[in-house]
Image 1 (cartoon, helix red, strand yellow):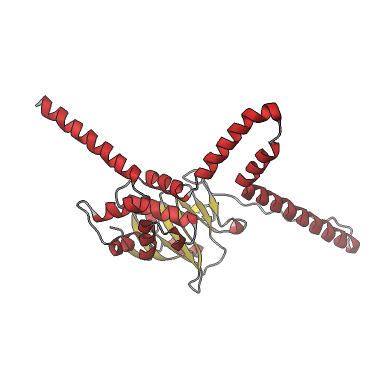
Image 2 (image 1 turned 90 degrees about the vertical axis):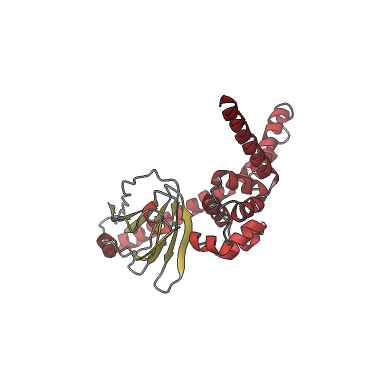
Length: 296
């Protein structure tokens, strides 16, 4: 009996090693296609597309490695993560491998290697300092540009405020006091990871936060999409002011809805897709579940 158990454990370990070796040799697209078309749960790509609410051509592009079909990198990674979870694969492994295939991690590693080599040689020579600065700017250019824009906007605001104050002082002697707008954030149930729709943060009555991974789409009264993204736990979205916006939650139980700092009732259960959710504050407090479709 002990011998049979030992043999079984040995076979399982060998199978795991072989599977890992095969995944290392296969591309992300090949892994996804293999998981969908083999095993006990063979499925057509159309079926998976309906279950994930992801367009069929996007899933086909992932399997073919034709990433140019999908508009943005964030959608490529988000769709790949959801696809992997649906097929019973490790989503972190798939996303990490996909980043390496797309060269999203290689640049950082190369930069680290460059910096390490320069640290050794430049101590003695001191001749490649400009390259370190260039590498830093290349990696952090988004933050640098953002900081410069914030400084410019702040400077323009100060100039406009001072000019307005000078004009008002010529009419009346009373000092002009600028109104102070204070935005109170809700007591979120999950630590904030990333914020979206920050242009609306100053006057947003409705704030969404993902407490589970969920796809969220926001539309205006004309049916135009103003926001569409897979939110992971901690992500926050500030809904624009107004009563004309509606939402679709891919996992309704995974989204907290805050109305003027108060947590509104859930718009649906876990792993349930809910559409046509009115984001008018009064409707959210009353709880409108919209059209629910259970995900399978």
